[in-house]
Image 1 (cartoon, rainbow, N blue to C red):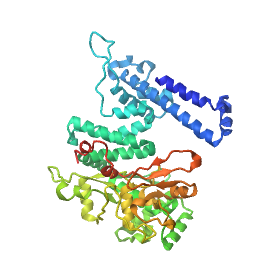
Image 2 (cartoon, helix red, strand yellow):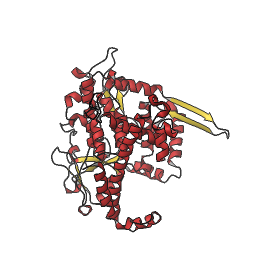
Image 3 (spheres, rainbow, N blue to C red):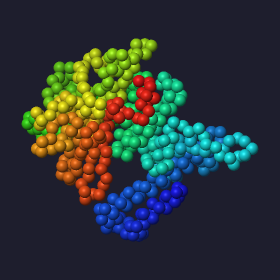
Image 4 (cartoon, helix red, strand yellow):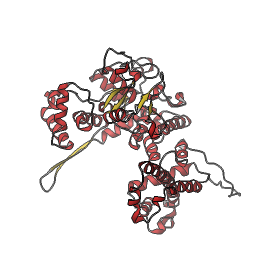
Amino acid sequence: MTFFESMRDAMKRLAVFEELDVDAAALPSAVVSLSDRSVRDALTEVVTLSRQVDTLTSVLAGVAAARSGREHGHGGLVQETGHRTAVEFIRDVAGVTRGEAIRTVKVGESLLQGAARTPDSETPDEQVPAERPWHHPVDDALLAGAITTVQHDAIMRGLGHPAPEAGLEDSEAAVAWQAAAMQLLDEAPTCTVEDLAARARALRDLVDPQGAQTRHAEAFDRRSHRFWTDRDGVRHGRVVYDPEMGAWMEQLLSTALSPRRGGPRFVADDEKRGADDLATDPRSNDQLAYDLLVDLLRAGAAAQHHDVYGANQAGVRLVTMKDAVTGEEARRDAFGRLIATACTDDGHLVIPGPVLEHALCVTGTVDLTTDTAGNPLDVGRELRLYTRKQRIGLAARDGGCVWPGCDRPPQMCEAHHIDAWAEGGATDCDRGVLLCRYHHLSLHNNAWRITRTGTEPFVLRPPPHLGQEPIVLRSTSPLRWLWDPPPDRRSWRIAT
């Protein structure tokens, strides 16, 4: 099927909704008349068509950029229309932001890298395939409609390109980055674009731990605090955090504001009273965050965490494989720096070995033993609620709420028994998953179920009346790649 045939098919499926065949001015009223099922189905067809249009736009933008380089001077494709670059042309023609125009051009340029080319020969009509770049699976997925241009950009920007300091030969680097890209493609349908980009960055740092040190150092050098007073006498501040302190600050605010953001409900009575008071506090979340920071600064080193932000002390939990920092697997560079990585339990930040080693010096550690499927040890039915150590294990395994597309971190989640406790279910980690409060309530209120057979993946089963297929649930923690690795694990982990 050709590209245009595919678009025509999408238009035919959309044309089934005759209510939409009206003048543009009457379109809102026509859509309101659709049933819930029709709205969902029509949206699906429109999104399919939109993806195809976006892909074609990106390819055209890539060609426009190729024909508008500096070597073309004022005779380039877009220069003839008075535009300096293809980005400016796309921005004006499409009416989009500069950032969106840049993304469109970059996606198009990526697609053209693996396109057919004409060799310099006496038979210019002969087409030969170009050497395909490592990211061709991402390009192919976009052309096949499996991902959007925005997802393509998230994967490519997150992974970046193999750098010489990655410690790999060109062929090895290509294999490693391609395996990482294929893993991300497999997970793209079940996560948000923001989460996909975060996973890509985390996976890049796991593939390239030496490069992670360089990137962390560069991010640390960008840290800053700017303070100024405007002409009305109002004082302002702007902070750029380094990765470690940025994660710490995010955890601190998330812990303090958890009741306002739908945090866990299963807490002690005194904590619940405090949570209820915070939920009804007339201050906005931004005002509460400000007051918290001011209180912390005032209290300083003598502060008691109970006095400032309640019973749950904030902190960043780092997770790494024990062999990476002790024993025979530990590796160091020529300067004695640890070549390893650790990640936060939500999987959004990977830190390099030197920072990990510093953390090991100043904070405590908790050893977590898992089975080959990543499940922590069990405690059976002795306890109704999951223990603190079990929750650490669930956080390391799940990385946060496992509901498809949800980005809530572990501290915003509740542990759900997939086998109801009242019906004999055990408080075992292999029979529980993390769900945020909203999705935990939604699961129970709307008759969704989560099941699991042995050590196979957890499966989310929709209620029968929706007519949807079961969904295999995926962890968001980078540690999942240790027991569910990409196809070529040896090549993928060659640098670690």
